[in-house]
Image (cartoon, rainbow over all chains, first blue to last red; front, side):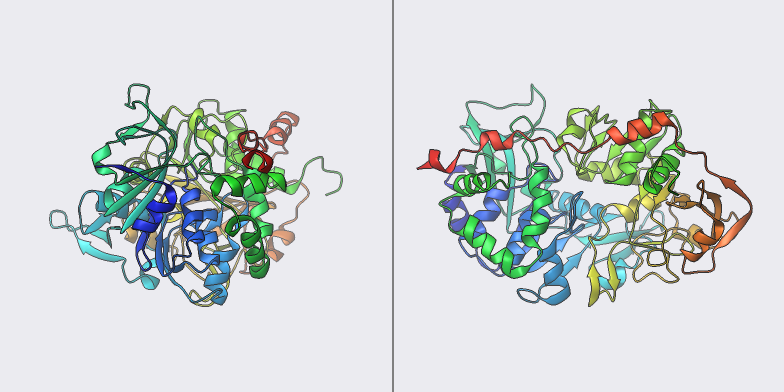
Length: 284
Length: 266
């Protein structure tokens, strides 16, 4: 049954050093408040799983929280590089990490297979590409009915999935709308799930559209207003394209990045305070 | 080029947009492909179906999205589906006619690299990676590639094969057993290259106004083949330029208004 916790407590209880954490949200509803909380608590040796690492994983990587990342597109959308991810890959800064690289179709299938309780996902990916040479988890089997060669990859079964949604009701049912990415699949594939929400309301259902994840499939709900910033929550606030553009400058140099994180994130009382400081200094 | 009233990039986007059919179903990445498709929809292809990999189907944005998952895309879409559904049913299922691709490197068979410059394990530059590209290239009925033409991008040999074009040429692509026909045109800031019907190697078939074949040859690291009958691309019309220049990402966001000031928190 769903438990309502403060985000600090939820992260402390479920995100343990060495565990695998899927944090999803495809451009929309990226659980940034939870990512910031993991950094604040200094949790390390994580395996981070996300299709598009985005700023949330760029920060976690730069702060040394990750030993491994599983991903399929590591850029700053519409802007350019994720410099902390690049620095880790190219120069081992702040430390050497393992990179398990996929394409989007593979990641989406790995989550869906995990949600379906399957050990692996099969699809028609990667044909002709060099990815099977560099990722030994990409393998091929023959369809027993047609003889067609199919691609197989292990399913994602993260220890913890973290997603952000617009609403939860008081029983802990989750409601989200707009671009849904692989959030539902990530929650169902994971052993434990933490859902941060913009607000808690009396009741949610699908009569006005959107998607509900029932309370018995979610472990923890945390209220985290503006918790997807600089991503967005449809119906609540827009994406901060300006912050995505500024992130390139903030993150380009490692030491400058560390100073920035210290000044804005580590010395803030909570996520709202962090956002207020960003606003004060015209990052938003 | 100084007498031209448009930039080489604008020429490239206009040339790409013209290649979309009026009723095309097109899978779009961000950047120039997004501009080309939105331009087509606002000019000769009002019925164009635009699909972004974030799951938005038949979307009609009024401002240019900065990311493939901008709220403008879901708000103006006929349908929004999950990412697994997008890749499995709609893309792998063979419903999408045209896919747009870009890359950091292209070879003579229009194979693409968007993964690394240099060695995979110790690269000079780590690029974003595959995203949706490998399956867009294999499962859309055709692909169009948009790239600025220069020797660093148009290379003799890719550092990494992220996405398959005509593979090794000839009939090699058929051996992949994928439904997509592969790249049908590479649109650059200098002209248009198309794969030869027999051997699959890219041939320069169109030049944009004011560009010489020599310039295209010099901008290509392999010995570029040039068609016997080179066609000059039609210049962008005033209307196309007007629409294209109005297509800019929105900088507006209401989020700042919703964040409290530090004083409020004390």
